Amino acid sequence: MRHPMLPWALWLCAGLTLVGCSSQPQPPGGVATRVERELVSHNLLIDAGEQLVLTSPQRTIRVTEQQLHRVTEFDARDRVANSHESHQSLPWDDQPVILIAEDRRFTLRTNHDGVVRLNLLDEQFIDLDFTNLRTIQLVARANPTVVAEQTLLISRELRAVLREAVALVYDNLEESGVEQWVYRIHRLNELGLEEESNQLENMLMVLTIADPELQYEFLQALNADPRP
Image (cartoon, rainbow, N blue to C red):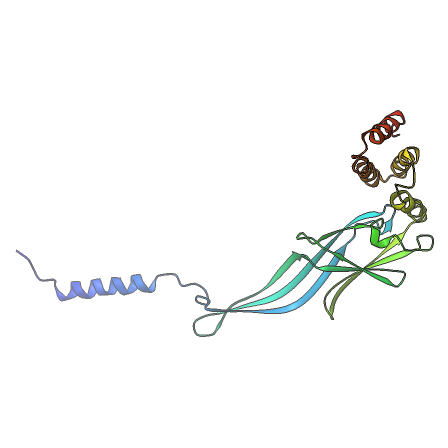
């Protein structure tokens, strides 16, 4: 036989239900429904390594973009639920970096990691007066007010290497013979320019591919006078 629930029992159940609902934890400040980001600072940083005096034609340059935002979260009643600062550091991806030397400007470009590989023996630089070149300046610019600059010094030893290496790398190969080819390869290696030495050797292999006898003579001379 079913008995109707007594009035006091109904009130007890209702009270427990209300207590249970009111005891559910609420997130502080409520749930954010709108977020505002305010740019506080914006900078570029050029990292050219700890040593600012170049002793080699090559140098790896890394450019980083740094931003500081103030992030404000608002709840459904448009009250501030939270406020904090957010730091962001990203590679200066696929962006120009200007190199200034002797009042001349050259454009380099970063890769997707924000890195550009400087090589003063690249063809665009070979007309510079390496005898008197003392400094180069690197400039990265996001906008007129966000600019990073870095100056690198050219050592006396490097200036001498550059003057000699330009001729070794870029003088006409077809106007010289096998003996001169081998000398140029070895001399670049002696100057510490192994990359350029290897590139010249590979170029000569391609140049002589249509003349097996000349290529054989070149390889014989190269092997007879091994690199130091």
